[in-house]
Image (tube, rainbow, N blue to C red; front, side, top):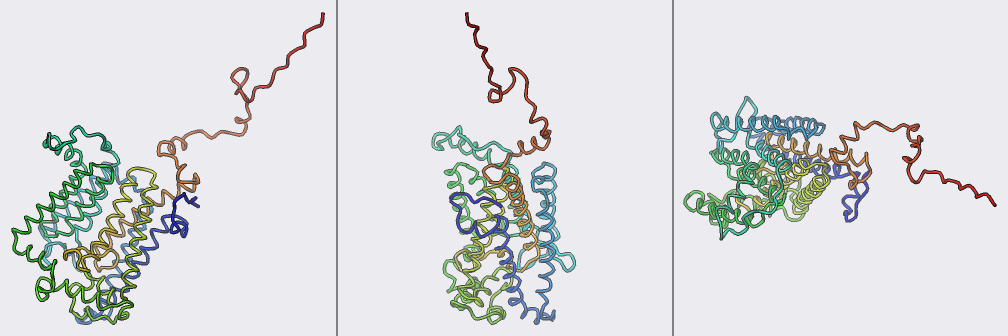
Length: 447
């Protein structure tokens, strides 16, 4: 059992280890998602003549398969992912999927994001999120740390200042940039921001220049504003986000219906399966706006409960990252935690009108096979990092005394000392000082 450290909160003492603390919120969120999908889709299932359990049956199939993949990755040694040949395979496989969706993908709701194979549709951009995290984490674990830069003042040498920092970041962002470009061509602005943004945040958390980090975000915001202002459609979308009520019948319809669903839930909600937003009032009620259906039926209490579960997962995810026994595990765990919790907060903020409407699902609650599979793959890898932490604690006793990878490898090949060897004393002057026998002085003969 892990020995709690000073400063650990009571949350940490409720569980045997951080791995259990991370998995319990995910289990509860998954149960909530399954219950909510049944309530949000049974009307659509009846309308489409697929029976009462049409969408729910598909979801359970996706869920069982995704959980099985997550268990396999939990037993998998995550450190193998940072090997060059494994990284190359993951990136190329993701790239092939991203290119194929642009060539042969099906257009749904004005976007080409899915590859339809029979009854199954695959969204490659979902897996690009995880692939970008794996790539950036691997590079952060092998590249030199950001130390004292040569150029500190952009006013004296702007080219050197920017070039030095871009040159440092580019190897870590080359694949996230490629995936982001291919995603924006679909188009999918929300997923593009997530693919590039989380990798960029990881680099900042690794100790990168904070001033350049803030300046890059400011420049990106200005460029985004100019691009939106030059596009009448995007500018109208932004206006409808700031004030959706005048656009309640067109651009702001989905935002308004989501706010009405959340607000009508009150404190305790209208009750399970009693919400009215799923009666074709709220578009994408079972996918992007699944949280609105949950808030309407379970009220403010149910909505806050989901937020607290996300917060608990984030807490234990960061603890796993902090106690990781290697650099790759640390950044991989931190990136996955940011990916899951960031998507959740982004989706909840979107439903509540704080963020613009984008195609970012709520992990484990929104309907979608690709999203569910990617999230369980991420949880499986995070659990693999946590499992290695737990095994190290069992071997040594406390996280502070965990051996490094080099020490652990050397200890495996070091010959074990036998009891007979321990009892053997080295002769003469080579005997340890503590074990030397005191010498007796002979008395001098009396004259």
